Length: 215
Image (cartoon, rainbow, N blue to C red; front, side):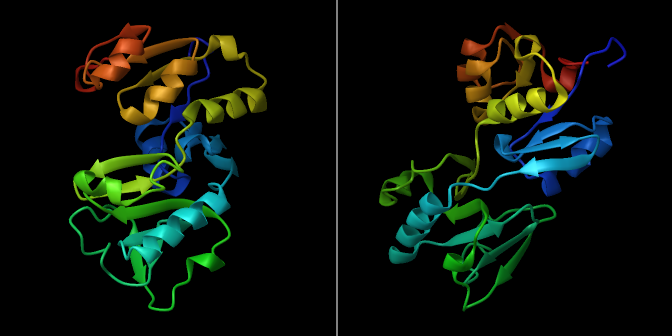
């Protein structure tokens, strides 16, 4: 920043979940919610939901097969379900998120889906025919989350918003949800502790994140 560069966090987390990262790093610009939201100078500029029709198709199948799930509406730390099966599974969300159980919960009333959590082990994924209808990330052996996963689309929105040049973009990352961003960015740098597939497509591999690989 001292040399005139625009620095921005890019995360799959919702804005409400990632605010702490801005406070910890002092970086107040952020592409959030897997590319569906952008934040400038600490303020949320815009955020888009997931495709509603695809979310409903997915939830209809989860409901029909009686599989545990929970839904996040909007940029929120609250998630909702009609029973507590997801909340009590080992892979239930942690941190500041709060679960709400309502036997009368009807996902058809939700207009803006931002995340859908599912309690299902990896070896059981074949039970869900529509599992690939939306991007998803497994964060626990017992659970995964459907969420936006095109960080580079968010970067493009940010560049357009600030009047920058896409050719100047350099991205850093370490995980599966960075793959698309690495494939599209002009220059990509993988952390030393990154997953191997990400290292294979990176322009450069630096040191581990806990060894000042970026600093």
